Structures are given as structure tokens and as C-alpha cells.
Amino acid sequence: MTALMVAGMFFSTMLHEDLEEQIAGVTEELRQRPADARLYLKRGELHRAHEDWKAAQADYEQALKLDDDLTVVYLARGKMWLAAGKPQAAKEDLDRFLAKEPEHPDGLIHRAKALLKMGRRPAAAEEFTRGLARHPDPKPEHYLERAEAQASLARHEEALRGLEEGLRRLGPALTLQLRAVELECALGRYDAALARVEQVAARFSRKEMWLARRGDILKQAGRSKESREAFAAALAAVEALPERLRRTKAMVDLATRLGAELGGGR
Image (cartoon, rainbow, N blue to C red; front, side, top):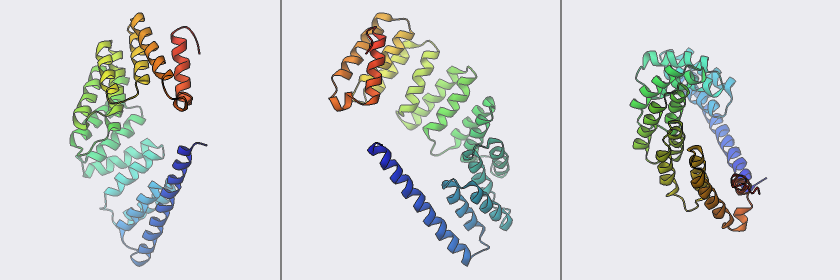
């Protein structure tokens, strides 16, 4: 087990212990104020973060029993159903919430997510666009999910424009740039894809992965000589790494692939 995995397990344990402490704290508050709907909502949200769907659902239902005007519960429960892998149930609750708050950006984004998981891609793309236009703090994943919906409908130009919108708004998000590279290639715009890879590579001191990606694009474009040159440069960059880096699984796998591309094997 690597040090990173151990650290991840440690922080995950800390997070869950912290959630359990918070849940216990809200439970104590509820003993003092058992008719407080917002406290049930708060504890439900903590259970959702803890991925205890049954306990979260029970608290959401109790919150609504105590205050049926607390419509934000439907948003919270919709998010819970999404996390639990039940998009139809999520959409039903999000519909209830958005009936009262039709312009709510978070509600629109999460209903778009539900629609996407239900396979309703045109509706999902439209809903993402509505939500993103209203959202004060969108995340790269929102733009990526919309692009996924659009690209699956062969609307590659539209998907690419949407990613550009995200890049203008969020700055040079790596995930958005890499998806844009894929879309440029899908549209046969190989020079544009290469230009994007150059932009991304300029932000990193190590170049082996980006040289390999350049080789992949050139190969896809049918530019064999240039692709071999890029693969050779990538392999040279791998071999120039310190031994501790060169022997990592990622670099061993990359060197093997590059060797195969160059016809020599590794």
C-alpha cells in the first residue's frame, strides 16, 4: 500500500469521524428542540455526506412533516437520490423543488445530472445550459457533463463552444482543455488540437505525457513521420527522468507503449 493510499484512508476516516461527531451534536440539539424542521434537514445533510441514505431519508421526511413549506428539503433529497444511483427519484424531488424555485441554479444543475443519468441527453444539455447561465460558482464538471450530453448527440461543435465558455469563465481548467482536445480531433481539427496540447504542456515542467499526446494526435491525423518524432521525443523524456520516477508504473507503461509505437517494443 502506497503512502498516498494510507494518507487517503486516514483523511477519509477523519472525515467520517468528524461527520459522526457533527451528527451527534445535531442529535443533542434535537433533544432540546424536537420540533425544529431545519435541524432535521441539517442532520439529513450530514447523513447524506456520510452516505447513510436510509438515515438521511428519514430525517428529510421528518423535516417535511414538521414544515411542509421547507421546499429546500426536496433539493437535498434529490441530491441524495442522485448520489444513491436513483436518478428517477432524484428528478421527481428536484421537479418539486424547481416548481417553487424555477430559476435556482443548483436545482437546475442537479436535475440536468439526473436527466443525463436517465439517458435523456437533449433535455440534460438544455438544463445544464439554463443552470450554468444562472450559477454564481459553476464547477468544471458541470461543463464536462454538458459536453458529454452534447457530444453523445454528435453535437461536437456545440460541445466545444460550451467548453470554451467554461474556459473563459473558470480559466485554464485542465479537464476542460483535455476534453476540448478530444473534440477538436473528433471534428478533424488536428492543428487546433495540437495547439491546445501546446498550451497545456507550457504549464508543466515535465513534457513526456504531452509529447506522447502530441504523437497520438499526429498519428490520428495520418502524419506518420511527425508522430514518430513526437513519440521518440516522449520516450527520450521518459528515459531522462531520475530512476525513481522512471520506475513508476505510469512511466514504465508509457515507455512500453512508446516503444511499441516506434516498433521496437520495451
